[in-house]
Length: 267
Image (cartoon, rainbow, N blue to C red):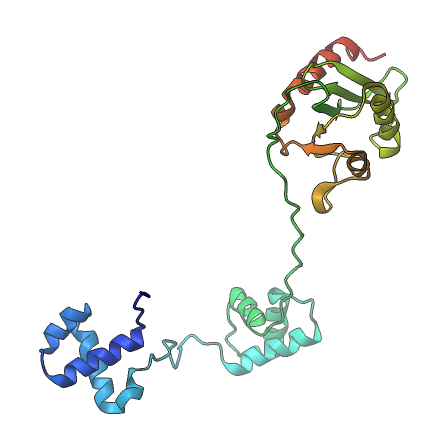
């Protein structure tokens, strides 16, 4: 059996019908319909004066507002704004005041509301937010289930050049599969390293990385050309959440040892 749904208009009609039957007093009717006597007498008076049309809801906007900006002042602001679409409220106030010194002009925020109400304010386009798959949940049960890859932060070597160490490890055995010093984080430098590791150790099921270059981008699905190549080979990229390196904790722990043994001092 469907639910019985009533609208405020239906309740008003029923209230008036019960009132016209004269079976109960107004006080009893108001208690039955859970309204105040003031409200009950209001609807009765409207019905007696206007008939059924008096039961319609009336707009609550005041007919007159003592603080409303005069129409001629509004038109003055709109005229200047249409000629100069880049001018803001502060500039418009100065120009209109110069032209009409005897006018009592509104506040700057009111001018902004006037422009917004007349569609003269352009809102900047919102940047599309790229979603994130969330925390990795795949459990590592055997070697080659998950590889971890990352760049150990760049540092200068003794010759003054920057070094970008690309490290790859097996998440199950913690075996360091590769540690290659590169001159950048570009895909063309990183791809040959992975090609060599795939040939030597086989293909893993997944490769877990952070969200930086060259592993991910800000495009749809966050796939870079490197991770797209992995997918074509049958390897699934797995991203940790931004700002949570502990989700790749085993690899980060290896980085601490790597830094202590090789970069103090850098050669």
